[in-house]
Amino acid sequence: MSAETHDAAFTIALVAAFTALVTIHVVTLFGLVARRHFTAALGSLVLPPLTPYCAFTRGMQVRAVAWVVSAALYAVVLLLNR
Image (cartoon, rainbow, N blue to C red; front, side, top):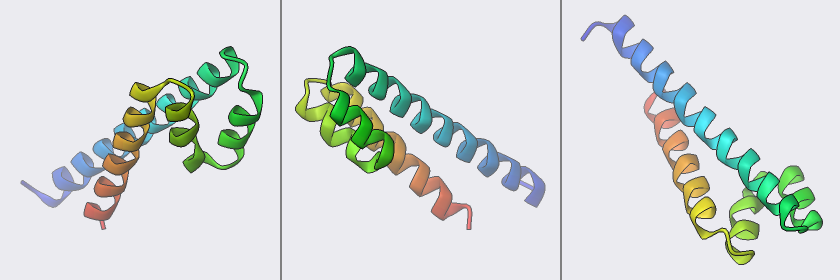
């Protein structure tokens, strides 16, 4: 595998992981607003790591786990890319 291919693969993985994280974050925020947890949604908007806690405690366990997994995947790809 050439250096350019290696860099391109890591870049695609990094963008995909970040896109998944942002998408899950936005979907979770809309879920909190739909369930009328406005303070939790605002807190999660201002402090993004608060999102999985708010989601988990308000009945959205799958979204909370997906958020944590996508954040961990993003962090791993980011560290491997260095």
